[in-house]
Image 1 (cartoon, protein in one colour):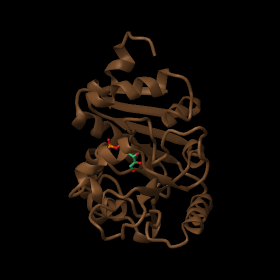
Image 2 (cartoon, rainbow, N blue to C red):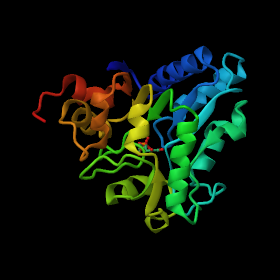
Image 3 (cartoon, rainbow, N blue to C red):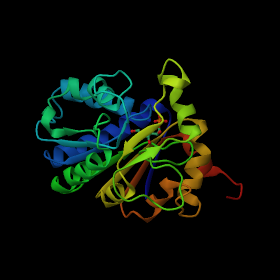
Image 4 (spheres, protein in one colour):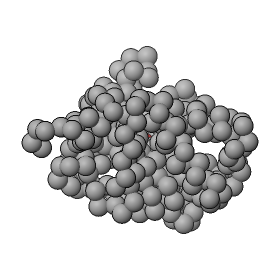
Length: 248
Ligand code: F6R
């Protein structure tokens, strides 16, 4: 695993954007696995800036997002499709047809999950998967469980995830209780994985994910088995991984 310890969120975002743009420049039709949440926003901003300067083009790039809330329409302001449009897709030259987000409104969710797995397979898998990490170690919305969920599936969000995400909604009651998420298989089969983490509140889970046992109770711990993981974090988020002395 490569680790980049950055001074702050801005430096972390720039480093992550560097890695993503290097992938797009060296393989213009690459498949990027994308994440939402606060961790990647700065990297998306940086990519938009470089696109506007003419330094990188996404004309041929294909994308698959990790997840979507169940029950939210694509134009709902808290949907992940809306997030991606607002933070990245609307500002770059990507072909909308080349962007994929699970359909949160699908009536037959099992069919939608199967379709999403087929989409990823037909794209030839993911070249670079960008991940944030939840406080409980979730990646995508793969929450702590007794086993690693393999394919795209519907998940009941945990109280800790609902609590962490309520800041984006008018009230906690408005946070959807379910989501569709890519499974662990598509994530670990990605050729490269890029994890972005920031803030002191992530320090403990970062240490447990990368130094603790590999267990579905900490879904991100599976990344220890991946051959090409890059972790980019600010000093606060990496503080326990790099310097923590306590036992796991
Ligand atoms: C988002 C996603 C989640 C987030 C995680 C961290 O698409 O899949 O796993 O990456 O909840 O969220 P932030 O970055 O807001 O701390």
